[in-house]
Length: 514
Image (cartoon, rainbow, N blue to C red):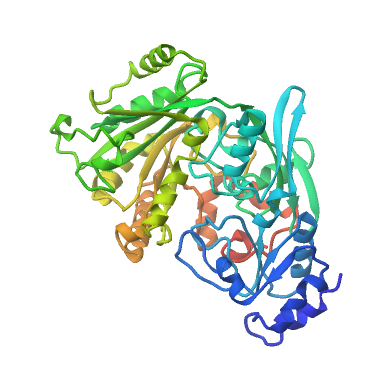
């Protein structure tokens, strides 16, 4: 492997690496089967979905496969100050998929490398590339095999490797756990460029470390994901609450019931008690023909209301009355406001791709590319009432220009051997403030408010964790991992640290622990 050309290219001065004509020799110098792009062609790699940071890489690598990823990491590890960032579909918020003057590896170029159905002792799995989009995994699995992964994220234009490096959470996680609880095997490229296959029994520390490990243990290039039979249809329902305690009581009741005794999907969100088209009543109805009847809302004077969102799976051959009866039975114990129910029936694939339709509308309206200073939290059940009183009812009572999600999850559905840091209680809530700056507060105001919310959680001693965490100091990371800190550090030290990852992505580089 010849890396001398690259070494001379990026270190002609003592400053930051700067691209020049010599970088075109990169693919030859390390025998890449893929391609290297420079100049204006790297623009896509200089930004992410968050829109909060912009930084130009030296080059954008489009690997042909795992061997290319390995070669790039080995080459970069031999060059002082050279950093690498793995980029899936660029949906990170805080620049984790970028590197200043380093190498960005475009994992999307490997999407077609793996797609194979496996039957292992009667259980089905899909062996898929880490660079594949979940939306493509969904449509191909359903159309070819009538099967689908068990756990999802709400938005499916994300890569397999990207979500498995975080957790992968949606309304099915209360039953099946997050996406990282539904993986049987991974292929990882470590910090020294070694290609390693790992599972619960084969290199288990690397396997569990990489799941939810924020990219600290390596780059996921392949995953074996558990499948189940896919339903044909979904009845998607929204019901409204005026009281937070009734909303949480019903949500917790649904996620705590046994399989077959609850809905197949449970989420929720907070919305403003006004007619704002983005933050208020108009954001609730699923059926555009029937609007929101605000006249039946009790006159409590509450600044915000709560929507419980559920879904019931069924087959095309099921008689409508059977579906109606089953849904009515599940709704009967719930204490939502009578008359504030909205529902639609759609195919399973249409339901899972529902955010894709919203994305298309947002792009058409010119708001999708606006900055997204999102805040995602896990909040313990014991603290969620205080969070509602202070954050929802006061800090963000006028809306944020986007959805404010809140729904309960079950800790017992998460494997405690993974790297994800969770609150201590069995039931905890995902809270997501999904801001679109073009229709809400400015970037500076949004970032400041996010910081204020986190600082309030710390000051009040709430049992919480950031989901998709991004901190700036060793002390903050230690507080985040809590009792996991020692295990996290030791586990990482037992492998080849990803010390060449870009500072925005590498906890240990940023906190001087590598």
